Image (cartoon, rainbow, N blue to C red):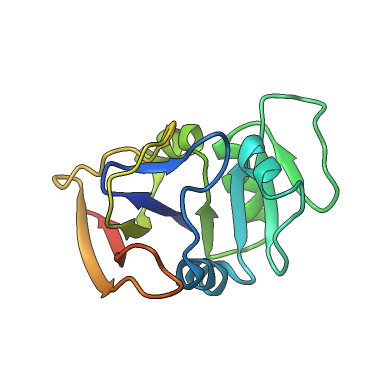
Amino acid sequence: MILSLIVAASENNAIGKNNLLLWHLPNDLKFFKNTTWAMPVAMGRKTFESLGNKPLNGRLNIVITRQKDWQAAGVVTVTSIDDAIFVAKSHNYKELFIAGGGEIYNQSLAKADKIYLTRVHTQIDGDTFFPEINTKKWQKTAERLCKADLKHLYDYSFETWEKL
């Protein structure tokens, strides 16, 4: 099974502040939905709570938390990334998407096979960051640049990275 990270990060790797996203990029939201549709998406509890405690439609939602008795309607709760991988494999999925937050990305990067990165071309203040991509271990295999417009405050690129 392929383990993929999917993230939008600024040039300084900021991904959030105060448990909120740092921008509104409708095309990135559409990309996320289309890429993860009908697939399992694993995220940390704080990320799930930042989504309004509602599971993402059309996907198996897996929430990773150390709080053993934490539960939410419509999600599978696990205590580790390995458990999330086990759940996805047991349902015969070909790919599992890790959707944040910062701590979960840090824990899963070494296990990952692919990164879907929306690089937001700005430096922005954040308190949560995506880990640095080591270009000796990862290769950019695709990139599509998109310019800022009326709905998108910043230039951004859709990038795909694969482990060497």
